[in-house]
Image (cartoon, rainbow, N blue to C red; front, side, top):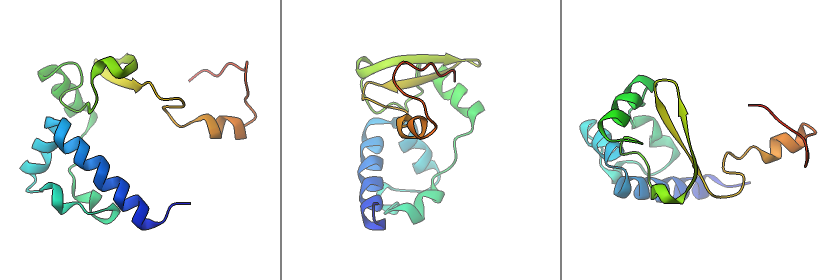
Length: 117
């Protein structure tokens, strides 16, 4: 189990990467009067403005396909899903990208089983 310090370090690293590569996130934070250094860990995450689904569609229309919120090159994605709206959802290429394998295994699913989402 991770300690609070480990989580805070991961939050800072993830946010630094997003700040550098996701102009829409950086702009939202700056509009809220936040600098990257203002978010030091889990306690301060609530200061970042929540992005609502209808706002995501607007951002994605203005800067297709991910609205300036994708931190990797689109070529690194395994799939791009399109939901009604339309809303574009990226899927990275790492194994168990959605982090559901452990829960599915605990529920009794295994190799060869078909799960409908």
